[in-house]
Length: 159
Image 1 (cartoon, rainbow, N blue to C red):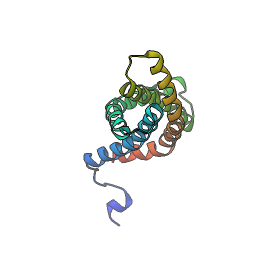
Image 2: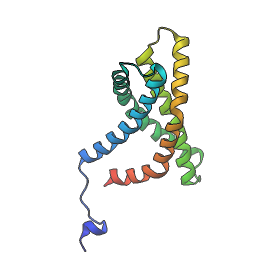
Image 3: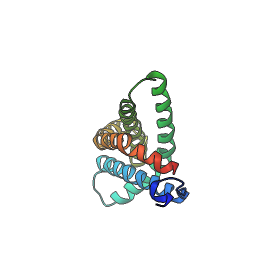
Image 4: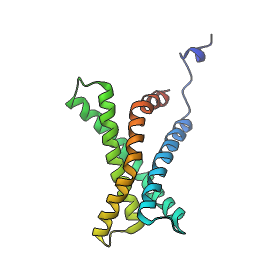
């Protein structure tokens, strides 16, 4: 039986494969959430697709580093606060915190892109609506990511 079949000494995955997997996940989650938030902020209008695309283009460079940093800090914090906590509990807490954090960032960037900051009352109201509309999907994705996909993704990235 070859080494590749039993999983020992398997070759490392090329960097481009790792980048494509991360980009695909970010596109799916970020694209869906900014789409929901764009719809809530401005509805379906002639410029919907360009509104969504510009919101997505602004969100991605913010979302990627902020999410990675927040997830790292959350993991370290949970290990300090709950050193003997069950791994699944850590994953659930991380997923919930990530959902709220990422939803907040996406709602701010999308609302700022579409409405600007000229009327702060309108901005806060639109942000709250965008955040609330995207939260159910965000929570489901965050829990799915932290419980099921992250362990597999960690193994994939380490290979």
